[in-house]
Length: 192
Image (cartoon, rainbow, N blue to C red; front, side):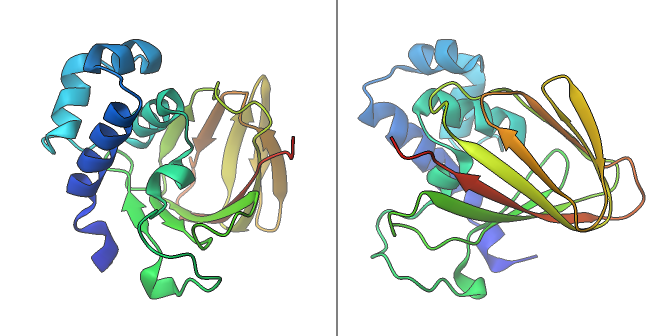
């Protein structure tokens, strides 16, 4: 296992609590905004529970950020080069999908790049995000196959295919195949 996946539960716990408190939100406020139970949020903040990708995405949306923004290291001075060994890696405890933040933090770019390894049989549902309606993403599949549902449309992606999606729509990532699907997500914020 990658060394960057080890301390993540405590880092997630601290970050969720710090972001909630910085916005003067109570556990109840965050629960109402995210649809995640107050008890679960409390367990996450105490480091007693590992949030799934779905749950963490809902918390991020309620806190006004994306998963990429959540995992960004604001304390580290911005540098234009982020070596692979220093990229933040997180594994979803439910599906085992591995998410690697590839883009250097703090550069002011409207683009974030994420590398994902999505295991056979994995399925993740992301609700539409409310806080940043102009946020879009491209999914560029490198290996394997992936079934993507975005809004009311379902697409079966093959290696080399690229799918454009708006985060204002719900998405279902599903790998019903027997091989890992490896892909990049390129998130882009529209300039206002």
